[in-house]
Length: 437
Image 1 (cartoon, one colour):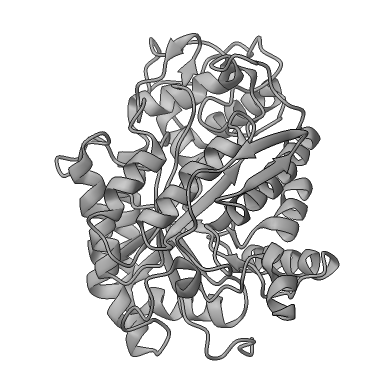
Image 2: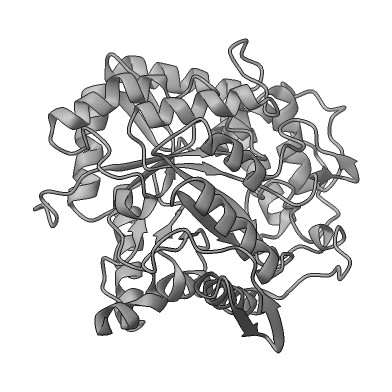
């Protein structure tokens, strides 16, 4: 394929996940998910590698499975904005992106906290806009409940517009949603700046929301080239339909890098990583999401349960194996595969867990990343390290220099602003003002 963007550079961010089983917790080199030192080491390594942003995931309730606290991965850590404010003090350039929920927050409060992070960091803040559709998170809040999928994005749009109005009105009085808010934080950045807006929804409603409001999309299309290109082209079409330039959003899919001296060594390393990610207990837990019951008494090296699930919907404790699928159909397909291939529970879960991201030598992965970016499949990648805090070391020490040799990665920061790192235009609400200025 001919390069559509022959001079494009690869943008890199690091995604420090919350609930997940992609991080290897059992490795002796694994750091605490609560201690500040772990976060400091990751963000400073990323800044040493000239990354655009450090991206922090967050949830609003401890996860449960079958009525019990889920304790196979992260079960709680400091508030994202508080954590990022602390990290702002030990960094100078890298952007700081906070996942914040629009279903259960309030625009006036969240806008003020994000603006504070933006001011304290010198224009490096970003907001990953997320919605929540489950009632069990809502139970942690006085109003409780949950919102239907379409209502979530309707509220999100109103929330973002209110937050932007608040950012533009610091030091004055702003009226939104039939309420009047007195704003006490003074602006410390010029008119053209707001916290950068990230968004991660992948449904048609989510993509339309992004085309209207987002500046960066944190997508799930970071493994297959054709899939990524199709997603990026779809976003470009939606941007045009929304009256925005088709390059108005940076697409940064979540992905994983497994690097080695040769492609074969990298493939062997990838097999080891997957086996460490899916522990026996994790395999039983993932299977239990489908069956809707505690399967911890089963032998992970034994056969799948012979009985059918009694539930009608797959649990989404940490993201389900088949969101919205009939668990009986999933169980039946899994049993058929296990019987045909003589797989145990853990072997079946490993087989179902598709290899994600990029696996290969530093040279081959660098070539592939350049191909993706210059063909328009993506603008860069948000890396999910399989080990923290040391999982970025190979990327920074080996892959970044290889990209620089190809003329496809910055050799220094030229700004301390995240908006400038990403090459973004002024926020959408400001453009008419700036044009007329």
